[in-house]
Structure formats: structure tokens, C-alpha cells
Length: 419
Length: 202
Image (cartoon, rainbow over all chains, first blue to last red):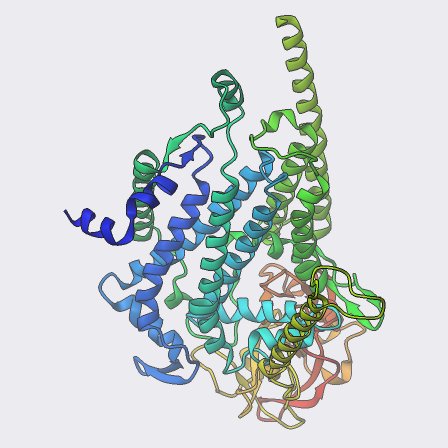
């Protein structure tokens, strides 16, 4: 009855025929993007609750008799609400899951070579989404204005400032002055709750639009099935009802996991960190910034290069060039691994020794730089750790390449025997 | 009739070429005008970074803990101990934060400036020269002479007996030394400003 009323006005049947019958290829790794998207939905919902209670100001107000920044006080008050701290943890855990799933999604696309022609555009949009997600996480660090927040943001301020030539200006642009400036918290708040989500939603829309236009890549097994059918249509389950049931289940399962984690696993206990004070605790950033953090520890202080009036010191090498080079490589991938014709099937990573082993090497490198973040606990000298990083990454590359090549030859031989 | 699709005659501009150029010019002008707003979004320099206001004659007070703001007494420290201090009345400026360390006077080696030390007390800027974290003290209980200054952020290590020279980690330059001496009443007083640049060297 109701659907008929809407159908007569909005021609829903047309929409349904056009979009809801689209085939969604089935593969166990095809849901990572959805996990990211659903984490974002949870972030928005919990974020609305937090945003309505948060006060983006560093002005001092009284909290239990002590004068503390209003931002810090407002977050302490959120924590004191019934279930308030749970909402804050839901927000933080969702952020971690979102970043993890975006990275896993990126890895999936890389290892199955789904970035190749014609999907270079969506690869680049996806990288933009990764960048902006990290930006959202980073701007969120500062908002509780605890000692942890201020130290982390201060480090980022000086890293921005270390950018050659324009660093001073970039730092003032991003942080609304010289950190800690009074304008930094309001600016980060606005970026975090308005600008970044708006850009993120637009990019997600674009990402989906390109996906709908280009259609999903298919598992390689579909190739033979399609040839057998003699058809050109994508093989998969329809968006409605099968895929929709999976998606809805996935969303609520994710929500269940996040609420469970938020209930039992505390994180970012700002009351323990306390408001900003003249002492820096031993602190590490969240896991996704650990490679940069660890890499910064490995650069010796006397390593510095001077080019055209700019001094590139250890801060710039660790904080700007390391992530910059990584980002550059990611952007370049689909233009280095070029394909002359369109690829619409995902590739078995075991059949691409060079690209797969390179990916494994990068993963090993990121893992080892993460370990570098713990050299103070592990009692390893930075110079020795730097050697371990290089040796392990290189070994991971060479060994995985040789193994994959051997595997490939064995497969070829096997096929030969079969025929 | 004018054929708008064809190339214009030699030296003439077709309607299409003109329209295209016009749109490009308008877009360029609009983008250019918006770019100028970026300048407004980056507030101008106020003088920049860490500017210490500590001066000769300032008394040393505890920077944190239960005795925050209280005057320090030389008798409260054994060799191998360190504490964060501010010049009295100037704790609002983090650039003034100093790590006061007590060692044995005989341990000091160059480039420590002996005229800035007294009775084993030596003081350095507490702002790490790498990325601005506040340095900590790693106390060796068995061998107080082996204690050292370490930044908790990226593990830069400074040798307090040798002018806070960088012994390891990413800090590019030593922490700046500042003169201290013990007064007759046992309190401590600054006898100079910082001997070098303080804060991140970016």
C-alpha cells in the first residue's frame, strides 16, 4: 500500500530495475570497503552525540576546583555521563576499525591487481579516502585537549613546520597559528566535524559512482563460468535482496563488535593523561601512526641535508619524506603497472611474484618501523634497528619473490602434465 | 551564415575559441581570488616558537608535583637526581622550562661550561630540540653518574655531564645550557640566559 503510494510518485520500480538488480560478485574479501563505510556511519552517529556536548575552547574553566581547558572539561563531563565514556570509546574504536578496513581494502585491491585499467581513477579516489580518514583521526587526537592530545599535536606541528621552504606557512595554515594557539582547537573541531566529513562523503559518493559505472571486478573463476554461458553479464548475487541482507547483517554485526569492544576495552583515558602540564609522558600514537613514529626514532640527529636554502633535518626526513615517498609510490602504482587493455577479473596474487613480493616487502617495512616505535622498551639502539628494518624488508621481498616464482613454475609444470 | 565549428580564418578567433578562452580566464580569476584567502587562514608570526624570558637573578621553583611553585633548596638533591624547574613567576611560558640536574662537580667535561655550574648543579633547557617534547630523566640507581636525560617521545638521549651532547636518537643539537648557582640561603638562582637555541630546530 505505502510502497504503491511512493511508487506512483517516485517511480521506484524504474529505480529498482536499474540499480537493485545489479550483480554483486561474491568473494570473501569484497566486503572490506563496506566495513569501512559502516564504521563511518557509526562514527557519524556517535560523533553527533559527542559534538553536541563538546566545547571547542582552550579557555580555562573550573572542574572539581582545578582550572582546566574547557575542551578537556567538556570531555571529562561526557565521560561522567551514564554510558558517556562508552560512546566516546565507540567513536574511537570505530575510527580504528575504519582505518584498518580502509588499509585492508587497499591491500586487497593491490594484491588482486584490481587497480589496473580501467580502475586507476578509483584507486586514486581510494587513496584520497585513506588520506582524509587519517586526517580525521589526526584532528580528532587534539579535541579532548589532554596532555596526550597536546603533545601529539605539538609533534605534528613541528613536523609540518619542517617541510622545506613552505613549512612555516603550512604549519600556521593547518594549526591556525603557532601551536599551541587559541585558534587551533576551534579550527581542528571545524575540520573534524564539518570539512573532513563533507569531503569524505563526497569522495565516497564518487568512489561508488565510479564503481557502479565500471562495475565490480570479478573473481577469476567467473571467467570460465561466463565463457560456458556465452554471456557478457557480470556473475554475482543481486543487490536486492541477497547483497542487501548481507550488508545489513554486516552493519549490525559490526555495531555489535564495536559496542562490545567499547564496553570492555578502555582506550584514550584522558583522565589518566590529565590536562596539559609541563611534562611529557612516555606515549605512543595509535597504531596507524606507529610506522612514522618509529621511523622518526631511527633517523640520527646529525643527518641533515641543505638544498637551496632549505635545511632538511631529521624531523623532515622522518615525518615528511617517509610518508611522502610512501604516498607517492601508492599513487604511482597503477601508472607503473600499466595495462593496455581493460582488466575486469581479480588476479591471483600467487601468480604475480614481483608485485606481490613488493607488497609483502612494504608490509614488512611498515611492520618493522612499527616495531621501531618500541626500541626504548626493547632496548635496541636506533642504528641496529635501522639495519634490522632494511634487512627484514629486503629479505621479505627476495624470499617471497623466489618462493612465488617457484610456485608459479610448479603450477605451469602441473598444467603441462595435465594437458 | 557563420560556421562556428570550422577553424577561423588566419588571424581570426572563432566564437568557440573565444568562449573557451573566456571560460578559462573566468575560472582562473575565480580560483586565483580564492587562493588569496589562504593567506588569511594562516595567521602571521607573533615572534615565533619558543622565546625564553628567563633572566639572571630569577629564583628556581618546582615546575610540577605537590611542591609546584615552591622554591628549590640545594639540600633537597643528591647527585644523580634531576627535576623540572621554572624561573619564579615566569611559569606561564613553556620556553622557560629547565631541567635541573645534580651530579658531582668533578664529572663535568667539555663542552659543559663550568662557569654555569655550581656544586654539581647543571641546568639545561627541558624542551627537546627534535620535536619539542619535554625531556625526562633516566636515573641509574646503582651508578648515579650513568644517569642521563632522555626525551620520552623519540628517545633522543643527552649526556648531562658533557653539555647535553646528543648521545643517540634524532635530536639535531644539544639542549642549551643555562647558568645556575646556589645562594647563601640554599636556594638556587639562574645566573645567565640560555647558552644556545632552544626548542625544535625546524
